[in-house]
Length: 333
Image 1 (tube, rainbow, N blue to C red):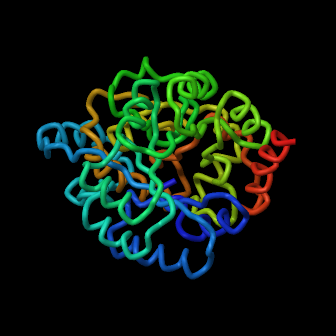
Image 2 (tube, helix red, strand yellow):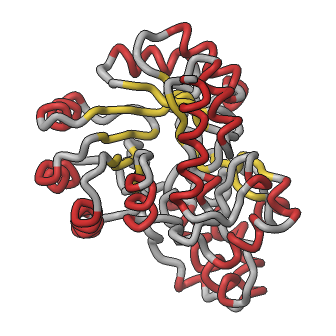
């Protein structure tokens, strides 16, 4: 959800009884502080902050140059000067600078993607009382997370939109659907399991809990909410037949992530061996995205979405959150 939501949506979800989440992967410390001030001023309800914990790759100048060569025809078509390609908005890994900001707020929940941070950072987060959760895409990853002290594990199925949370392997053949994964992880760990991927309404949430999940994590279903910052081209795609076809692709960032199929995915992906390691691939695509969106086109936009995208509704966040909460009430009854 990084880039398509901020504190506004997180506040609305928390106020409605869900666990609103603030994606921090593209925010610097000052921005994180500003957003957390907004959340804590608006609600006393629990909320979550989410971080990536990837390792920053080596610069790879030759590979980056080759990637720009591959994109050169698009630069020419759109009138983008190749010399204008600079570092894009970096995906930032959780570090002590971010922890310094969090410590003043002591968020109820801190979640991670791509594994876990160092033991020192884990100790800091636990030390101020936050619960820690993280994504697993395989049973082995879930067991690793449990062994390293998380309080709950997110079972991210292959249907999920955005970046795959895989961290013990890069083999996409290991990735399975949400319901198959939830059942296996629930049988393998003793901590609570949160289902993620392809869940768009109370019926999907109910089904996940029947299979052993204690709750669900939802992203795509909120993309059409007025509280989301989803771009015009992304919203238009979600409301069109394009939403029916998503693919796991690395052409936007260098790491596998599910998005609505557009021109860039069709023509050089979905998986390209030429893409530099995450997050280095993003910088070369960013000017194409900016220019195309200015022309009303989503040809080069990373329109992250799960396979539930055709089920998106233009509800406000409170209505949508209540729908998911109804699944818990139904199951409890």
